[in-house]
Image (cartoon, rainbow, N blue to C red; front, side):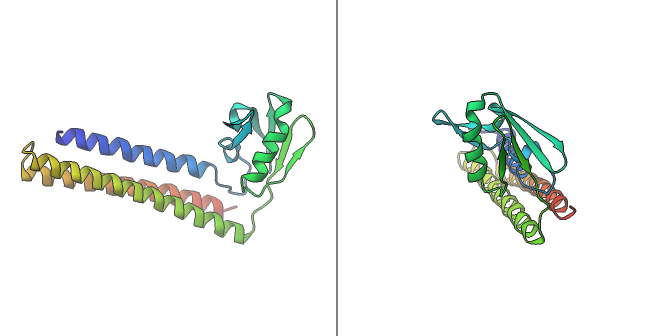
Length: 186
């Protein structure tokens, strides 16, 4: 495996780790209504877990409420159960046609819990990135051992992997900081 191939693989995997974090952060409550809060929720629909966005239209008529209109009115109860089981702390109001979710203002304690969750998710992403760095370093060591590259090339490659790791950890921290600011500014 060449140095470029190892670096490209590491960068692609780090990018995926960052994308996963972005998706996770989208679903964290900030005190403002957002369709992203519920669109990744999985609903047990006819025996299989299905993303809510495939079962209903999700809109925000105002800053404090989310409106969920199922394509099949028979799925209202299933959607309601999924929202209650999600741990979002939201009480669904079902009128037989749509589900309304009122987003109450968050207390200081809830904000602290959410920022703790953001920090935990960010740390998990950083650990994933460090694991990718470890794998890339092993690949460089293996390539040098198999005489596919010199010691200097290996060391240079490891340096590049470290630069990549530092850059992606900074991106993770930036995303986390923005989300925590959003949570605390409400």
